[in-house]
Image (tube, rainbow, N blue to C red; front, side, top):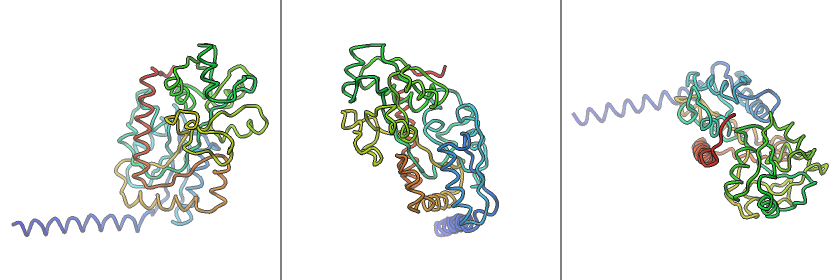
Length: 323
């Protein structure tokens, strides 16, 4: 009986491996859609289209980017989460929908269980900037100034629950400063008021701040990266300023609906990495201050989990709510 049982298990295992290999060899046999929960033309959309072009070229099938906007990414997220886990729907997720939003509102899906991580494509680091009219040139000076003027320093964010909002609240928790939050409908109006001096500071992405730094419209104090970024070599890191916990930025990566075969995930991961191998493609993003992790799916899953835990803690401690 034991011998028969072992033989049965071996046969089943061979069938499973054979099915997995067959899926990998056959995939894809029809068009694949990549759902992007943000508008066309943005950073997430550009990343998705770089990957889509590569996957289409090597497979001979169409990889179509589908922009499904609404509800801070929840509309696109739900559409992807409800899709069959057969490899023919991928999702361009990120910090907002996969790590922050679940702590702020009730979703019709669970990003933690309804998605499988595929690959971490890019992180656009955050940068602490101030209006040049503020006589501040270092993080230490900002902390001292804010403590000497409680409730009088205001910071702009791209909106409630945005990356800039989360990081600023983390900064308040770590430093003990009292700053006023002024949320905007997106980065553009927030930066406009920062430049005009209506608000004093902002945590924004290096990418979006580069034009303003070049003209001197804003002054950089620190980047939220482990090491200095190549496009801003003279700007110290938050770790150098004494706040090593403050690292990160807006990140994006590919996910697949739960249940998608591992062989498909591995194939997409490998080919997506190759999409960013050409120097001209890498430079396109690195020149904007971005980092391209492009690791394994397991590494991306661990990163997503850590981000979900970190921002959940900040949201609870700072009592952040969507208004």
